[in-house]
Length: 362
Image (cartoon, rainbow, N blue to C red; front, side, top):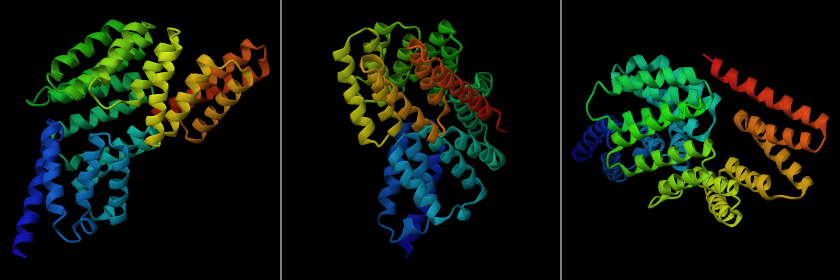
């Protein structure tokens, strides 16, 4: 019994340490989580009675972007009951759940959870936690194209992180996010400067540098500088696990260059990952990419676009509804099917309005 009491005390210390370093040092974070798991597996029934373990697991999975494992952690946490969490833990529950939904692209529900978390932020009186909250909120505003709001919150986060030592990784993340907003505004030089600022803060953090290389690739892809884009995108996944989003962009840029064989080799890799990780949105996006650049059968092009749009409608994924409705409307207009073209231009406008509504939620 005494040994178990010691183990429980050690666990609590490790939990506190996990929260303290989670925004600073990924390697240290993984080391702490391994120690937690090593202790927990020797305490009979612990994982069935202590939701705080699953709270830590959820936060850890979200930070590492392990969506499938995060889904398990969230399910276990909610089965045990979040009512057992204290006020501080409830803040983290809503924050981590919002971040999980953000990673999944479920922006409306994620924003709802962020707003609930905001009401509980008072229970975590720490300027760095406030900075992290601002960064995450700014990130979701970026995704729903509320660029001014995004820049506002991320700039506040950046200023707060700079007041403390040891947060180079978070500063780099803020610089990346501000750079991505600059890409949306077509402020290419500003975006490039932000990404290189981020590289300066990333130091020898290879996972962070990989992310920045991806974003540099995106920057050049948006300017139709496909060769430069491919250089940075392939650099991004060199020596790392392939990222389906990066692979999507590489395939698209090869298609733009007319290098069909290279494009389709990358497309197959990306599609395999999307299927393995059960990512229906990207399975559809890869198929749409191939159709848009190589399909000569007009009926098949129309059919695939319609199926894709219907999927995104069902998922309330208005960004992709807008993108592919425009493709289909332009396709109909080019083929002199003006009534159908008007229908999908109207759907595109509806999607734009829905995206604006998301940003208006308070």
